[in-house]
Length: 615
Image (tube, rainbow, N blue to C red):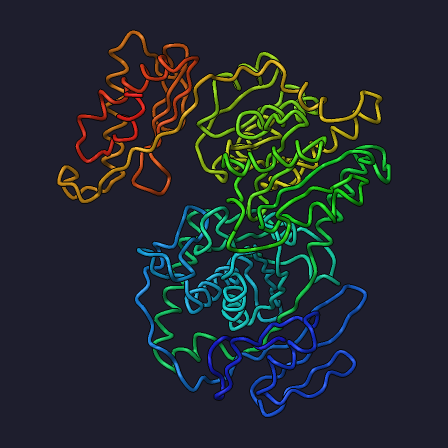
């Protein structure tokens, strides 16, 4: 149903009943709406009685499978308002995303992403979007909203929808969706789907624990940046303060009306992926016929890929696992970097004698694969594989990666593949923006990819789309078979032949104690920068070590056949240390070089590094 708030309107609590799908059972519908004198369902319309300030209807539109369509009038006056907690909105910023605690019950993690906070953020985004789009009264903007499988997703979806609708913008809810699909909705041109959306929101906290959640924002220009998020949170804080009084609440929510629609957009997005594979192999209907491919969605939002992408292409998907959405993530963390998750998909490949395994993170903007022999394509190997595919299509192009990629990967891209490796900063948005910048100054780049599994292609609007990365891999499988090069995933394995990989690769985290007197009241970033400068000075005086001549983040140093990178975390009081070396002894030597400098900073917790060099 299209009621708009989880709070009390004219003494009618609709918190459990609004935005409900007509696909639910009749029993559920009766139970949910029994107190509200719901008239019988008739011909796709549901009428409410006794609610003068809200008009709630549902219209069926079979040709595009709407679940709900109805006007929402946002001028109702609440009879009660609960007291509001003091929320520091700026602390919800996580780079270019918003992240917070949405579910109580974890010790030491108080809830700061409540429904009221989400509503305020929706209002802040609406105000930001109206200003950016320079909308006047004649232009009705619309915002699409989707979410992953987290247990707090639906309540946050409804709350943020309230904030947007209250500002007079129309809302299109997609329900369970992927982050790439949400951005894609700003590009799709189909009025029957209410596309393109002027703005889009994905409710997700990626691979973080079940109690966390957050928001990612998009326009047709791409994902919003840090400055935009800061501005939205500033506006949200002002809206939130106005909620302290009934008058402020009414004024903040506005008095206009807006609509909330529910659309099955994921089927459209999946169909586009299917078309992309077919097009790559001459429009063959089932180019993956005979391939056995298993999918591990980790109980996130990626379960659609097996039934809606692989099976229409002819692939066998039996043995796919954890496709059902479950926001408690009972089987493993949905994270292609996690060893347990990668072990799970590898075992599924072996158990089912599959040709390929595919694994996604919670919101499907990251992915990885496993070949039939159990070889993992994640981190440097995934970058190598995608670089090989892209450089076949665009010889000599620049591959942009994050800062922690290996020296072996650089050699592979530049010496084996004939491309150029541009190592930049951590953070998927940083990597994507750098690739866009390079193209703007005349240096061709077609791939921006992080070791985390975030990968974006120029041909796909620079969208970090884990499903599209897998489509590129599927294209290679299908094309190889069509060319008579045999079946299975051997063609993928062959593409990364020659990639030098270290015997030892570790990441250690050196935490800065912000309460230590050595900081002398300074921000942790200043302290971290001082550590980096000291390491740099010590390296300059050591003939066995060589500082990288070109480096965009932290201090990267080669020596003892390997390298280390010490950098300051983007958001946290932590100095991550990456070490790669040909042997354990060489890795320890690199670790000792860092430790000699770090020991002079007492606020720096070096226990992880101490343990590593002792072992």
